[in-house]
Image (cartoon, rainbow, N blue to C red; front, top):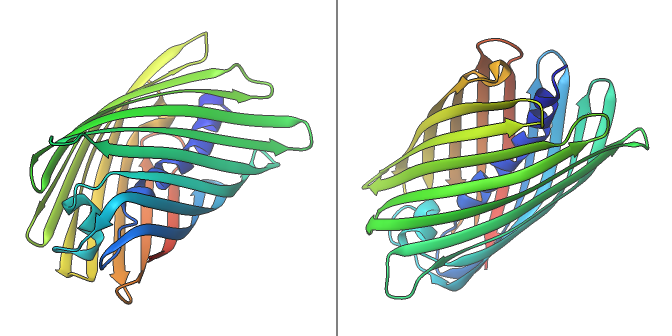
Length: 282
């Protein structure tokens, strides 16, 4: 089993947390949000990860809805601070890893400009068998710019270190550019990223291209789909990911989201992810 495969299995959850924070917006005039999230990742043939987290967001100014409820914070160009706490359990290589997850982050729009600066810190500490420890620490820096009221472009850089008992430490870095455009009832997003894994012996780089969209049937209901292609030096990462999701606001104060991702590997193991979130605002 390649150590890079093991690190990737643990790191997959971070993508979900960032995605869920960015999609936790709710209806009405509000300034705080809280959400419960559960995800389950299955990697062929039998490796699994189950994660449950509590995510909270506090906006520096009230959010007012003008359009689809789920896009309210984006339309408002809102600055915020966010926190995530949770537990994760992973069955891998015959061992059961479990432990805590923490994430702290913020985005701040510079006064009088369309420029948004952001940063986040992520930590995941797991253990198994009483003596095998896994730790990951990553820091991400972002800069975004609104080209108009509903078009955003961004640049981000992530740097982190992973340690797992019995394996060399793994340094990870990623640079990404992204865009988001909301027009009428359609939201379109694109992202290009290049990431590097370096264990002190080999340095390998892969790239991902991701395109996704959402269609708002009305302001309370949306359906979405996406496609990501991964290519590069790490063969077990190469493949295609297809995703679908639905977001529904039950009332003006509560919403839920269901999503499913299917990764089809060019070589190596396929995987699928199912997650559910329930959110409220006040």
